[in-house]
Amino acid sequence: MIRWITDRLGTSSWEFAHTLPEIYIVDVRDLVDKRGNVVAAVRSKITEAVEGLNRGEKVVICCDYGISRSNAIAAGALAMFEKIPMDAALQRVVAATGESGIK
Image (cartoon, rainbow, N blue to C red; front, side, top):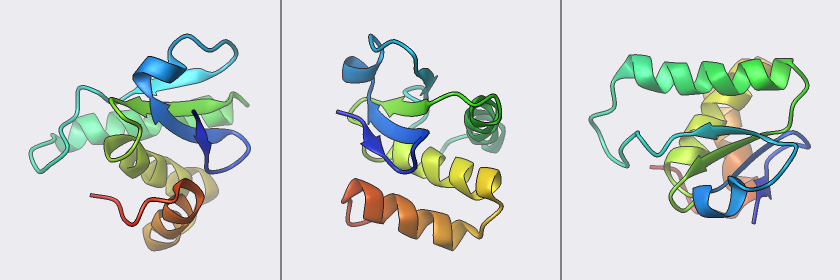
């Protein structure tokens, strides 16, 4: 299942989304669910998602379960793409996905 945050930005598990046609996948499974991610790696994933959105693609950010890493990167991409504060982007992702928070 894809949990759509906007009409063109969503999150999902890799297992579900990687076979779907007509979406651009940003694979964040190489990031960790805790502290320890290199800032450049996180920035790269956010930039990749924003570039896909700028091209008009439907972008789905995927980790193992589509919950932690994917939602965090989606919030960063949403903030950057829509030029909104990160707090507002986090609130929108939480509301759209039904998660209680983002790690």
